[in-house]
Length: 552
Image (cartoon, rainbow, N blue to C red; front, side, top):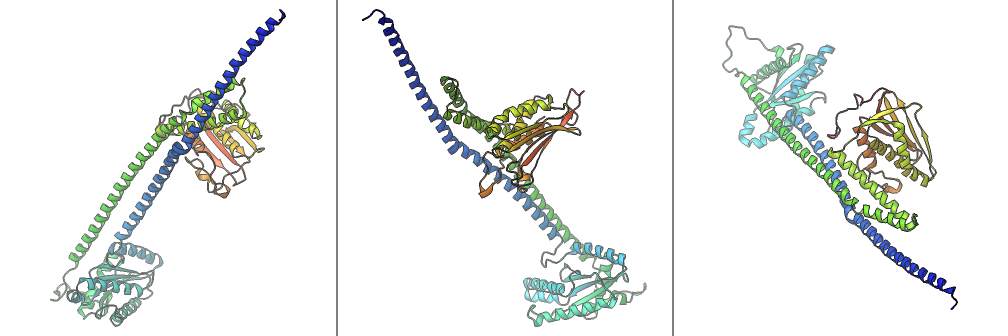
């Protein structure tokens, strides 16, 4: 061998050894990449099959809790309305009772006074009803009372009132009477209708009534006096044999020295007291039922609060559990990029985007859970709005560039500042920009505007993308709300980004609103925050606001 060939042989051997080492590293990197891909597949499978199911279950539980709360409120409202109706109706005939009669008489008297009109009151007592009860039983007697009540209702106008005072006594309020004699014609018509009940087979025996009539303003000017006058006239018709009517105005008053007739009926004050006691008992029972409903509702509200607390704790734990496998995946991707000369392959770049997307979703979930639990911490300071805008643009710019969207920033012509946490405010604006980029098609336009609006700092994000329907607009800031698009499909994402924006803006004493002309017309989201003056070095009075969700 030539002497000069020895170095070449040595160099070749060294190169071969180095190549072997590199090939070993390549094989190790490939094995490591296979493990990372397997870990990623397993993490995605876990998140898709188990943990995401847990998240969906939490969402479903929240919806069910809201539905139960709404159902409880509606049931309570219906029960209160039913109790109110029952307190004004006779339990047997379902006709107005004395309380409702007095109320309608007050309305009728007011109308009659205003229009200088008349109203009439007919006090009706069934003749021989005690014999029906004694001979045929109370069940038949109750049926007779219900039939008579319906007959009386059919015999008067819709605007008139038929009331059962109790026992076999009814009172009819005729709200508009042109002449006094008209009330007598109505009484005759009712007598004829009652007489026809037996022939029609609706009652077991003939029915008649003693009817007393009083008229406003001829006989009395108050409801109680009109009832008392009609009551006295009714007893006059009963003394005349029943089955007829008498006007109070036709009664002959007793002289002071004339003793009452031996067969004169006793005063009705005791019976009125009994009726009042019955009404009071019904009111007490209604109040007790209402109290039970309130207690039940309080218990349900407590259960809802506990369920909401459990849901918040579950979201917090779920966020931590979801984040645990993501951090090592992102680290391994960084290692692979370094081993590849600082450049990602197409596969690695796709994996990195998916992992970062999952990290962002998990971060949003954790933020929502923290805010709901009242444990969020804000580092408040004077924040230039322009600084927040530029930081948010830097976060959203990659996505807008990837989708080749046209972005325009229109900053305020003057320096404006607000009192807040710069990190959280940047998170709010970047969420709106990313949301606009997500729902604006490639090549679309997105605009960010900041300006002063009175005593508020305004930050607006506008796009010409998908837009929001009028039906969905009131709910876009609700937690887990997702819009249905054409074909019924639900938009991707968890529906927490805009809810997070609203919560964080509220913690800063501000507000956020959404506007859209409809589907395909784009949308605009506007944040308004309390403005700091140039000389202000601390929080404004209206932004040191009351704590939101227990957070100061």
